[in-house]
Image (tube, rainbow, N blue to C red; front, side, top):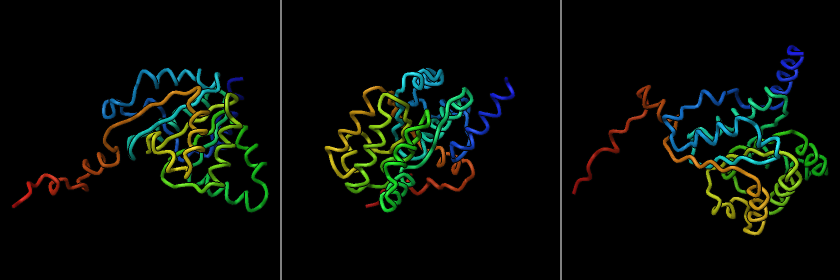
Length: 212
């Protein structure tokens, strides 16, 4: 039974299309103390999946939002759940392609099936009205039925710009936030830290005092 469970987990891990495999335990909470470790440990119990609740990670680029989203997905897959990962850019392209081929409603039903749908980097690309409408349909179809993990570099107040319509943005937020946990990470970029360590990021020019 244990071997069967491992085979199922390996298969579901492949089907999840994660960009990489990272564990929650590998996240550097000392470097990012604003990432609420207590809340994330609570999420690690996967009770949010059982209750069909959502998780939203907010913060600037490089603070580890995707790492945490992937870590939760890996934990869920290890425990028998299914997951599917795609970036917001990929989702926008997918919606446009399926509108053009007349298969958009079938695709929305497909995206309703995984136990967890991870949508990464919402806010890097804007959406036109039609795409935003179908994005709303995807969120609405999963509402109170299955979980969404979403990452974004935009505060909720800026989502009207992302979706090109304040009414649509409000409707999306209404469903996302009704049963959800938001973790707002305010810190420095892990990537810049690594560049500094490697000596590729020169900060001396920012330390110069202005001259008259």
